[in-house]
Image (cartoon, rainbow, N blue to C red):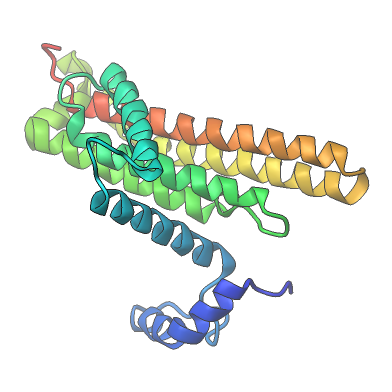
Length: 245
């Protein structure tokens, strides 16, 4: 069994006992009770901590006259996500912009971790994309119900022709549930393939080819994060759209 990362060992030392007791309280028994936190979860926490720190720095140092580099980066991300959201979602996109931006940043930073030697990309483990996909599923359905009401939102599942609703409703339900699987598999499979390709190249070939594959991994990381964000926007736009639109 490979040795865990230093941050994983630190987190297990500080919080391992607490995490184990909490898991056992809900009937879950970790494989390693002494070290329930694995590298994947530790890296996710690291990304979350980095994002929170970044947002705090930006918030505390906002300046109209002299924006610092962190603020400039935040404004670029905000503008990029906002532009995409306006095109896909349309009117009222601002309400969803923060969630979409956080999803994009979380996915892309986890993808980037695979560029570091001896670190597996967290999103190459299916549980990570599944968690993000499930959260996205709950988010867009919640706002669909919030905007249209429970009855109005359910009408989307029944389709435009009432006498076909008995057939279309279960099909639409299955289609929506399949979105979770689609989001999960797309991100997981692409990042796993990129990890394996880079690992094989470093094991067999000289340094030049693996470095080129790291560039490919970088491109795949950005593209997959963008696709995930774009699909989340599309699902949101469909959930909150009214018939008159």
